[in-house]
Image (cartoon, rainbow, N blue to C red; front, top):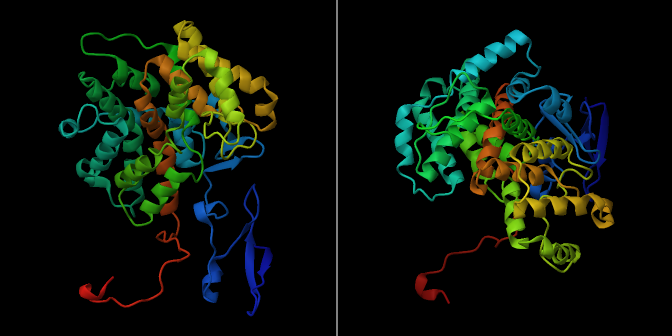
Length: 429
């Protein structure tokens, strides 16, 4: 894959030849690993021009609005597949046969319960704690309960841990919600699908078991699919970095949850609802649209455009359709916040300012509306994101461990003091 070479010219030194690597698709990559032999290294804050790893899992073409999982377009997976099929694909590289899917679904369903003693962990948290704070704690604590399969060099142990995480995350997420509400925690049910089971544990109580709407279950499943993986983002890179130290899988996923918690990453759909609260009413939209267009105004419209996608977010098209289905199913017509969101969507799809800058509604815009309509509080949005993204994180973790790897150790451009002596306390001024 390194048929071509680049030449780096450094003043006063011999030229350095650098291999050019070619992937399946996407731009060529200049391999700079040999730079260390020259006593130099590259400077790339935010890793905007640096590939930290080689991967076969997910590919994004932001200019053309393409997202592929193992080569399959996200739109096709959302339309023709379901979340557990997508999990199997991410974890194993291929879509399952009917027999493989049945076995995988059965295995996941039989691992949805968590150790009963884990319930006692929740009593150490305040009821009004942010759900992501609780998730970080309880997911990290899983290694204290499931330490029978923590040998990261054992492929079978890695498989067991992956299944456990995919299976138990909905249970833990629902437990976090129930704890915050002061309601009894609901046990999972093996007769329900993955999405149905999550909604059951979220909204049912021991004294009233309501049937799960197929439309809402399908919407939840699509939200899971559309958030399952997104290449080398901040949280996935965090999981890989933690994993490169040899940390156990539960600790790595807890690290990913912590990174996802940041409002610039996983908090985007929560930020959409916060923005709608700030706008307040449809009558204020023109004022806030003007603020968004003003370069000197710090106000930003959340849920429009995307850092990676310079065209339309391919996930947003699927999510818009799902959003329409959910609102129709629930018959929501007089919710001021949703009315405001729909008006903003209309403006973004027709206003030349937004069209010329590709500031289309993204997946966070629609998923926030859907989750609110279903009845999930905004503080739980990022928890659901973490639930869905767990399979992507663990797939990257497994991929890294199955090949030769090095512990992550970024370099720095040091601009502090040069070496200096420590003066006695009485001599310092």
